[in-house]
Image (cartoon, rainbow, N blue to C red; front, side, top):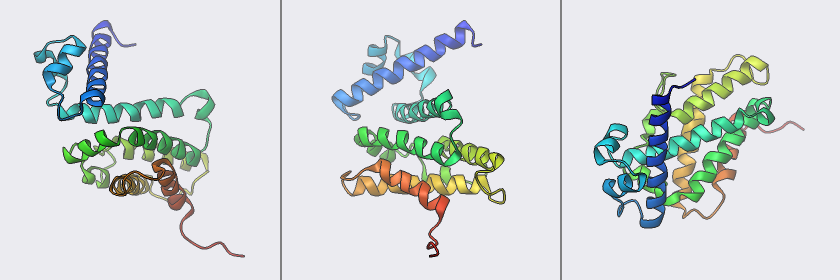
Amino acid sequence: MPGLREKKKASTKESLLNAAEKLFRERGYGETTVDQIADLAQISKVTFYGYFKAKEDLLTGLHNRVLESALERINQPEHKNAGAISTLKLLATDLGRWTEENSELFKVLLSEKTVPLNACSQADSESDCPAAQAMIDILERGIVSGELRNDIDANRIGRYLALMSFSEKITWLQLGCKDSLVERLQTCVDILVSGIKAKTV
């Protein structure tokens, strides 16, 4: 169990993320300062920099928090025994919904280069892309359970899916966010899992 110090650190980080999210929504990312975030979180500016190197790191923190929340959800008893494909779709739903609700923040996230595209295309399984690693873990569970073929490379397929999802997010933004990003991301899962081979009659 985490000690008192670890709990305090986690609480302070959460307060900073909550303050940043509130101010980014109310004032916009560009109009929000580190001083304002620290003031709302009721901590000093020096303490702020002990948790985040720069304001743009808060965007990455907010995005990663959504991923952590999604991972907690798929590990709940009612979802834990779901298959790999269902779990991937559930993850796609949560991440897609956050991006739909925070499209302006996601645009800033991209412009600040805090989500580098090549992070999800690394050959190393210890990727800097937490979404890719989450997908890899789910695929590995599917292989172990027998739901997925045991001759596939979960690391490679997970990175493919992360890249496909990232590309769909960018396309969705470029098209003006008019259709459902959640459906787009779920389609990515379907295509990767089912392939594009025509069904035989």
